[in-house]
Image 1 (spheres, one colour):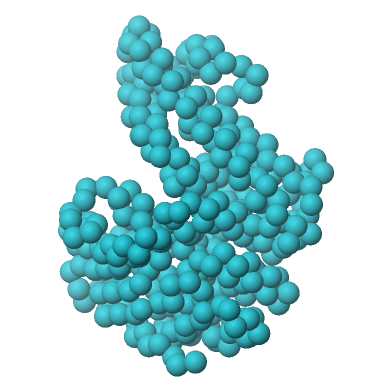
Image 2: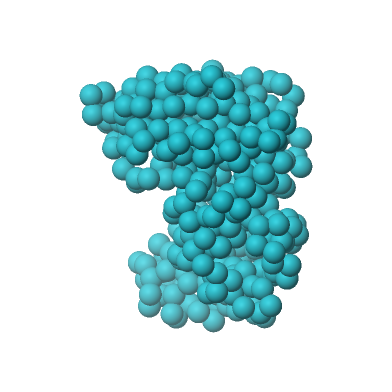
Length: 366
């Protein structure tokens, strides 16, 4: 999937924006700090995720002089089918979602057509923050790779909520039995999907890690959310008393995590911040490569402040690897020359440059 056109209305300081980005290659978004270039990436991200990477308060994204923001785009599939998508969010909290000129009720319907990955200053959370970030990394990939994932995930979340309600309200143990059996069923399905996904993903991560950091030996240790050598149903049975005391289910794929090792050492403990960023880039590039192998999909990359914490050699490698995937890439920079210089000698990389100033976006002629 690639974005052929983008219209933004009253999203932060972007009051009225219309652009036609390069469908394969680099879209460089230049401008001073506070000009609105990151807001442009945020608008694209919102279309694919239904939330911001900057704020959890949706109303803050609505321009202070407006009562709603509107985001519209047209994507083109690998079969050259053009599909319009749109989101409107009002100050009242009302949200309208449109896919192919029809109202839809689920953000997942938009996400199907906009597989978007973000690389920015918060990317290090994937390694340094809690396991929820790493679970989301796996589950994002599974959403696009496995058609059965979203059903299993939703079922597990629904059943987990019901089981936790019984535990919280201290209702009789007999009420837990049917919910526990269903939790085991869908929990094991999620666990198997995650394990299979990691197995397929790992060679791609190794490939990019060798190119970006010259690390040749790399493994992922996956923690399912309960004792590895114990059956999930046995774990739940053994923890009933503690679950009642705490008021929620402790064991399960909702507590899963993973760690990346090289030569037996967890990489997050030995890499510098810049090296961590390259590891995260390798992980995201690996997902993009897997997604690109599907006929119907292709990853859209959003990169905010590319030069941050990376030396010139690392920036050159990263941009080259992004471009090799023949994906659609949006990169922000204060000066567009900083990015253009990295691809100046590669005539095969299509590049468009947009300049943002005071919320206005204009395309610069190259």
